[in-house]
Image (cartoon, rainbow, N blue to C red; front, side, top):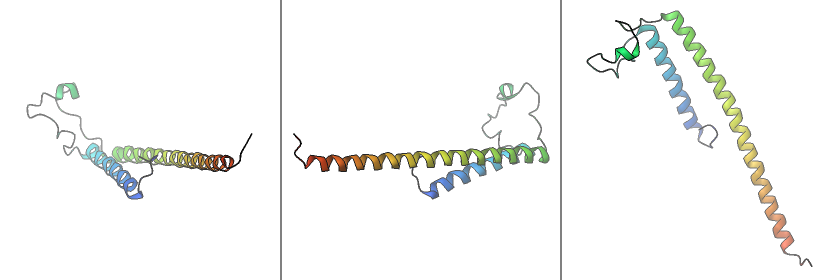
Length: 117
């Protein structure tokens, strides 16, 4: 998505959605309000492949969740910056290639006007 020439609004929407998802995951790991269990079946048979325990794991605690959330946010931002730099380089290379093709086309048109024997 970042390599394509898309509107800034689309990039902002994708980044905001990812950051919101990281925030939801951070709160779920801290408070265990049941977001992970939404897709579970009513008969609780899914617990056997989630973990080999009687009860589901407890919440991590707010401190650990904040540390994990901030580190995930940092990784996301660094990845975004690196990908954005790569995208800018790819678009610059594409523009250079396009300019050289247009220049070669002009040279070919100019040479075609002359009678070369």
